Image (tube, rainbow, N blue to C red; front, side, top):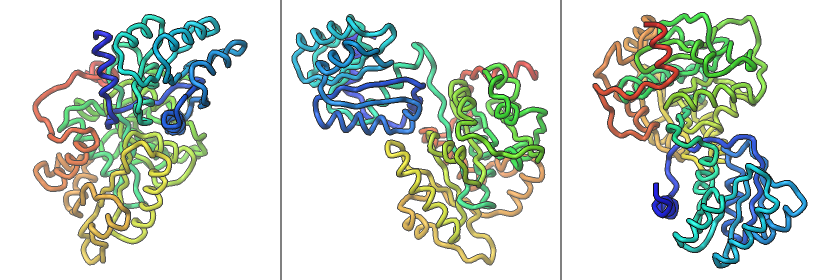
Length: 421
């Protein structure tokens, strides 16, 4: 791309719902000159995607950066805001270059839309030039792209599905939504059963793989892309499963970051990752929810689900201010003889819309569960399956389901299919 075109693309960019990859473990210092950019930068540093980053935001602009690093080592990333003219900025950058460590990346935030200045900065090794005003997501996107390899394909989207209460059918929703992503939207998808002791994904997909998520979690020193490939079990052309052993031979006193390496590998391998999150509360469960790109809360139309869903939504809003709010799915609606809270009242109490209300159908769900099938395999044209397709389309940003077309096979699923053919 021509530098001028790249410059204009950044100048016109706005926050979207695209996947922004978490930053690696780096150090970052920002030197700002205006309160607005300092505030946006500070907000960005508290975002979930910068959890591993050690950041510091201060005032003073490029001049302060030059002084700060005369005798101190430079961090991995320096962000400079400037309100001065181009010649002054270039002078500060030349002075900063004298003390910059090899590998330090520099991002400049300016207030002048000047293509020639942009080109001069790129020639001097500046990684990017952004035009104020900026939102926190603009900053996050740019910082994340510094660590995405040139030419790398789009990063995968992680969707966490959790029940507001035990027994509301969150696993059933997660599995059927993953199936819809793979089958109806033609997206390579991996479903991860995080309920290591009692997970049902293997039963629901009629799979009994000898290995699965336990091997990935309890032997993290061995986990890499090749090992992950061996652990996946194929459910359909575009759908693979990382199954839970569903055994009680070990307890789940896991560290908060237990799944971090696994999720990074999955995000880099397939477009869609659906996490079937068990209904329990621990450090690692909280981290899974907060770190996901999309959160789906499955609730029943009754009071306990309402209370718990509110707690989860409040937590997500506080911990994920730069993300879309959790999606609410009402499940088992219309259970015979059960008094229920109306969907409209349920949504009003929580301050979020109900994405779908899935009707209770004992025959359809019971047949699917007992046969190790998805609802689409039992009743393809029903309203229940349409609800799952709608959820999948919303979570992936695709309004229309596509049929009959094949996407490029993703590495892990493709290898798995070749090996089992």
